[in-house]
Image 1 (tube, rainbow, N blue to C red):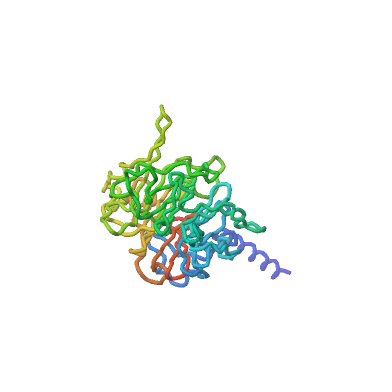
Image 2 (cartoon, one colour; image 1 turned 120 degrees about the vertical axis):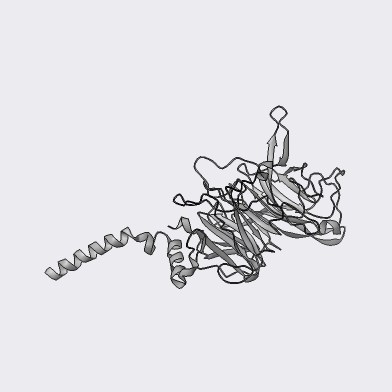
Length: 408
């Protein structure tokens, strides 16, 4: 009996010790922490000594050429690849695949409608054409059947167009998609026709749709032909300030957006641009303009900058974290890297409070390869609940990372 009492006391003390160290050893309440420390046990050298991103294992390998990744307002993981749109929980357990042709970009609005950029085959005057399309899906991740309730097809979805240009419309593309807090939809388009004097919108444009899917306008002030602080050359992506999760007191109401310029036929000084949504107080007229504040590069606060000339080569996806840090994540498929910036335009993450160095700490990483820190044509980026997701196209995987200061 005495030995049994000692045993019970030992178990009690051990349970207290383990519970007080539950973060160190991981807990059932946080599987991601378990995975991070499991990875650390594989190779302690992977954990940075200062500040950086730590792989969260396992990476997800069930994809064929994944080109975009997104976490929805429904807390589900969405990945576009050669098969269409994969829908999984955040542990990677796949729920279903929706076969959207040439699925390339995905986003969800606050009503849980899911939008996917893809292609649609249509017949015009007896001829078949393959055209850019945005599919609007209801119940994408519910127990019941999903429904495609609307399809925005080039050029019919463009209110400025009243004619079909056949093969010219075939070579246009919808390359990015974003939603705002009031469920406005932004769609980026690229193509060969960019006459600044024409009545119709240029092919290089940001199209704007209301919550019902009606094309209300396009961002007329953006330059479709020449590089500037408000140009739209070979757009490859777009991001707004509206991002999951839902919050109790509302989302960021800003209608500003970021665009990525992928045109490689001419020098483009700034590949990532913050476009300001402006409303005239007297007339109520909406315009879109540049954010010149990002040209103020304070070298006492950072070493590199978002608006540093020719810093990026070919950015292909972007997202903005909705938490207090508000980091901007950009992936570049020519540099095979992910870049991290603040909304002041500084490259890097905030230094820990205990650090004597108050400059932003460079946390961008990558380069060509197939190990845990390198990529082959990284093409999509998402952020949710302190976890960064990267669609690593030619390595056929979605990688996950967490900032080391978020797991201490």
